[in-house]
Amino acid sequence: MKTLANVYHALSEVTRLRILKLLEHGELCVCDLVAALEMSQPKISFHVAALKRAGLINDRKDGRWIRYSITLECDLFRRYLISTTLEKITVGDVTDDRTRLAAFLAQKESNLPTKRNAL
Image (cartoon, rainbow, N blue to C red; front, side, top):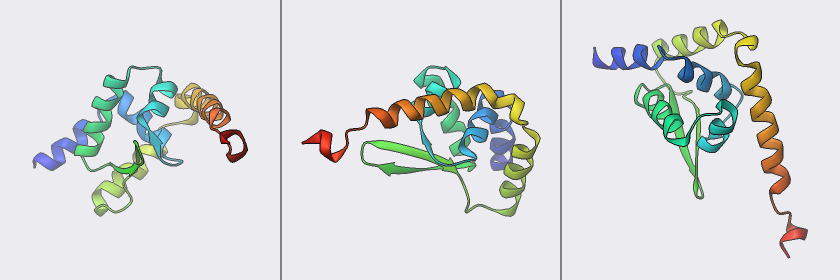
């Protein structure tokens, strides 16, 4: 029963729904979510932890980064909730989030040193 409550609690907050929608297209780190949602790192981390506790997202260590993604290996109930929730969130609801994320990722990519620049 507690697991069920955790899942519904995680989906009952708009910020968490926005995070799920951003993760729909691939994994992101907290800094990406901070830029897209224009919220503080502690606030984003709090919401990410709630989604993780509910089994809706998972994490992967990548060097010094932790990357988050929607859980693919979960029970049928969670898969159904994730897919129907993502369907109900319209593109208009997260257009600004996606625009900010795209700009941040482009800037982040352009700041990465290439092999040639690193020498």
